[in-house]
Amino acid sequence: MSQLNTLPKKFQEVARAKYGDLKKNEEMHPSVFGVRLPVDIAEKLLKEDGSKNTPLLRSILIEVIRNQPELFAAIQAKVAKLETK
Image 1 (cartoon, rainbow, N blue to C red):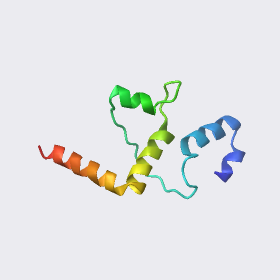
Image 2: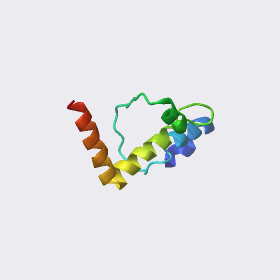
Image 3: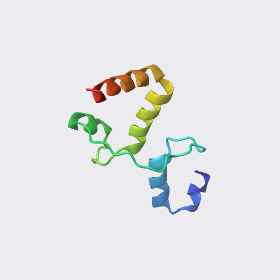
Image 4: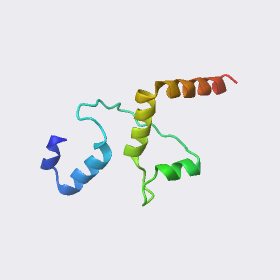
């Protein structure tokens, strides 16, 4: 993010909003994951203006997958069980 200062202020704000939650050396996957969510869940993940809050969603996923592997494994097992029905 050290190169942010060379960008116009508007672009700096957008870049910080998109990637400010990540480590500077974090490698990103090139594909976009799109999911449909129940309204009550989606409302918790949106910003006040109704726009998507990618840093929040990414932080939740990183927290569960990296820092709570038992919870992630339990969710994976539950989904796998549903897929075999």
